[in-house]
Picture 1: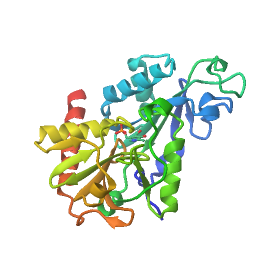
Picture 2: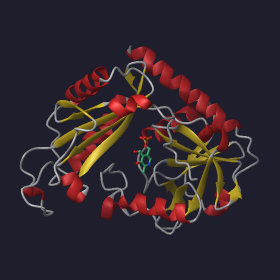
Picture 3: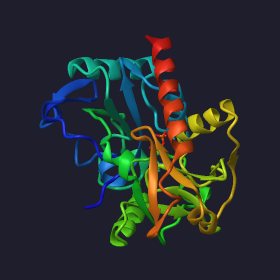
Picture 4: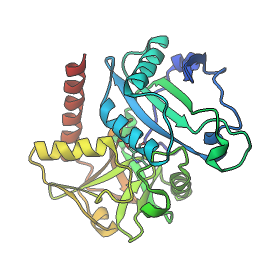
Length: 305
Ligand SMILES: Cc1ncc(COP(=O)(O)O)c(C=O)c1O
């Protein structure tokens, strides 16, 4: 059975959660959006994944920077400011009695259309704003076993088609990549950029460790991940050489360690790529960065409580 980077331990409390839909808090069975919604019809919307630790939304400002920039770039009027979004998040958490180990998907679409066609002017009743919040803890097996990646034919797009920096509802490029990885017998996809350099996975940013140096892509063609940037900053703060550079599959197969970053799983080790084991299974740099990241989150939370 494939595992995914977003596997969470089963939590029966999630069967009865309340979902925020345009200001209302509704049981998950009753939380619905229209079939005319721009998100459903076209994938025309933006989202953020965030985590709640001890009552604090980790790196809220960084997530909001990305969210507001994305919405501005596609002329999507959010209809509220950051304080309004924080209030909606906190209301949803309170309604669910959630304080820690919580993951949220905050989604904003161009709203309900008057006709089932593409033109944005057909979306006339304001945005649809939904927050799904779940009790969520990444499964331990992700850390011990690591993830298996396959390099796939689907590549990252050039920024003038659909810039990978949009955290858009439409993730078809990534979904196709993930399907190809599954068909190759792996858990998730390793995606190349249009020049053939290793770029990212379908759902997380990608790093390798070679001779004590940490390498990740230049940042072109991939999501400007909040966790990616935190790991780069942590390397600088801990005198670990970090390079944002082009590198190939050759460099990747020969790496000592590889890991993924994302808000959900923080840092997830990679066990193998295209059937080739990565390193010996000893992952000192990944373990150190994971430990430092955990401390960073803890400090961040303490300062905001
Ligand atoms: C394609 C892709 N890569 C990477 C990430 C990780 O970004 P972050 O660290 O901000 O969660 C995401 C998260 O939305 C993503 O969709």
